[in-house]
Image 1 (tube, rainbow, N blue to C red):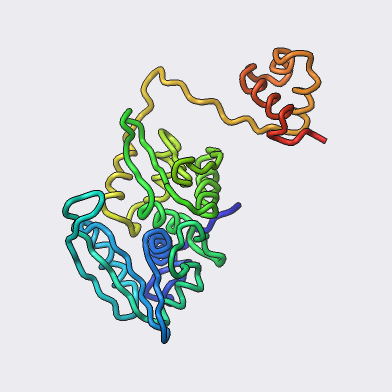
Image 2 (image 1 turned 60 degrees about the horizontal axis):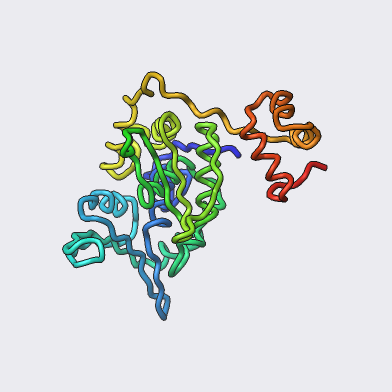
Length: 279
């Protein structure tokens, strides 16, 4: 899969031209953290509610939108905080809502159904919007750089993994969390540094605090003596035939040039139907 990085300017393009980095970012953020509602007689509203400390991002969205919109603030009690101070951006324009809906922002509940746009769009900016809304950037408790994304959408998780593989070469196996059905996609150490530097490039539209966190990953250096995980084995039909034909795992490992552990694991998967047998 190839990915587009666009250099268009929002001032010379129509609203939500996703080839424009700012609009691609904005749409990714809206898909993950916005809510599109509709009522009778074509009435409706797009709302985005975020922590009041990030209100500057809503002001930038408002500036990018050639329709009347408003930003309000409120303080309320939530399950997570006794007093939560939030900012809300509201957009009622039918024309704007129709455009967003056509691009892939559904009305109502959407966490499992959102998908990347099916038209040309700036991929790294779109991904940054999704991560700013539903992801994290920074250092783990062990002091390692990381970038993560939590999503219920299979299509978004697949897109994130595919794009990250293009940039870093890192493979990920997708699996929903058994507790809440969420995909947790995470990259650490050099992979996180490389992906974050690409996605959070200088001058891009982003949450300021996440941009600062992303920039902080650059100086990290792998400690001396810390080994690297070997690349994931790309099993082929011919390699599977060697595994099945060898008299022992040790013979197969020696012929393939790998340790016995991954060979034993792959052979078990073949014999137990987890992966298909070679033709």
